[in-house]
Image (cartoon, rainbow, N blue to C red; front, top):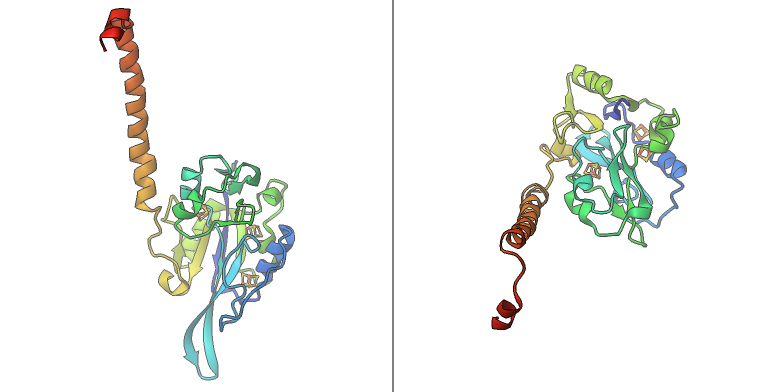
Length: 250
Ligand code: SF4
Ligand code: SF4
Ligand code: SF4
């Protein structure tokens, strides 16, 4: 199956939050209590009840007010996802569509995925189950586009085959964020300014501790474990089991 993704053109986003609402509606996410943090941004953070949040970024003062950038913040559906790498239960896994899918029934609430995500995306419900954007895999597998893309009237969120979206992002002549990170993120942003201005890391990476543990220490531990078993079996085959006298002498 082809890889699918989203291209989000921030220059087209008007901050209407329709994508935020359609996401909640499709995923049947409850309303949540919020707080006023002195910004139009609401709620202040992603949560188990908010998988897609519009970030409001105040950039410069115009003649009659302020100027804004808007960014739809959600899971990036990385080609090489840190969350999947560390998930011990299989609750997070790559789908054939390219989405990083969630199976809440398998989640054991260990929090590993949160520490392995370069974009600080996974959140947890009160019963310690992981919650995040699924790229609307349920809709995509049934021939529909994600709810947020359908709900975006100005066309800032475009769903399609990832290769085509990448070409379009690169042809824009602007910064195509995500194209060269983590194997290419499933969600690509066309940015008007530097990534840092949007609160994005210029070079997102899986934390070093995670890479060390999964790619180096764990395989070494496994090799050592298997080596010990092979050595014990070899000893048994060549020398044989300990005799009664040997055991008593000990
Ligand atoms: S953005 Fe985070 S949660 Fe989403 S796929 Fe990448 S590592 Fe996983
Ligand atoms: S793809 Fe689906 S789950 Fe993800 S932000 Fe859009 S509507 Fe929400
Ligand atoms: S629906 Fe489209 S224009 Fe409105 S906030 Fe979301 S991305 Fe921006």
